[in-house]
Length: 177
Image (cartoon, rainbow, N blue to C red; front, side, top):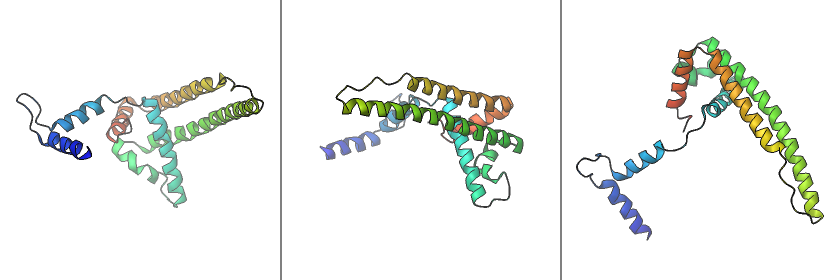
């Protein structure tokens, strides 16, 4: 069966297209159409990961003894056309976002620990599991709102052309897929 499937894929990949169709093999057309319909991350989540990466790069450069305070930004600053002032904006927002996320994560950890303790006590006494506390989805909404807030701060601090260049960089570097 595996041999038949492998042969079918190889044949499908080498077949030429019919007149009026693309000259690409059928297998690549399928992959292309599937990937173009794949859901994309919301931009604020892309920025969340990008800002966390900035903070990580800066910490790594500092630990390596970098003397240039902007050397950490080389992987993205030149490609996105960012000035030192704009890198400073991103650096500051990255630090602020991570502090805010740490606070939110501590709140979530407290709520989850309380739920686990309640669930464990309930199971030990033969009761059913308690309902998930309403604080958990509320905390998730707060976390999302916090990420949107930091995204908006970055976008507001950068001029529109720089923001567009940064978006283009993030798109090119596949942060959105």
